[in-house]
Image (tube, rainbow, N blue to C red; front, top):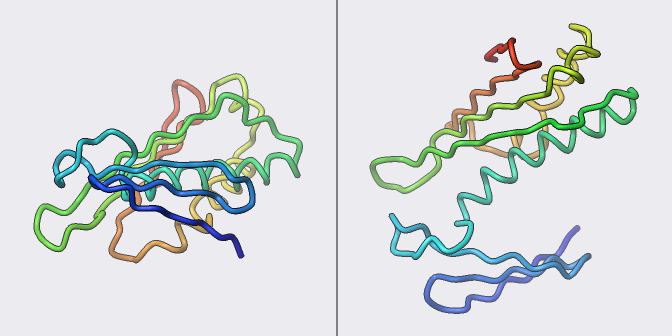
Length: 146
């Protein structure tokens, strides 16, 4: 169990404290939902959580297998519903591993890493109604959408 304490500071701003580390995180409502967009919105954090979770579980697997995922990047684009209720409908993920590291991974390693990303705890916690297409870019010249 991890405890997160959240204070509502007014003006649609919240400050969250991570219990184990004491680190702080601030949120604001987005501009299109009455906020100023001065920080991550709660739904931005959902998108961030997905990308960070995928990278983390892939990193755990890579460490176990002795693979180097250095320079890996993830981009998550969040799409909100156009009609009520307001919700995240799609999270487009592009995961890129630089050619120098991607060249060292055979097809079996790539399949294992992709499976791991698709089965990270955040992804498995999302409602089935949230579409999550993931594109893996194994080096600069190769892309495969799953």
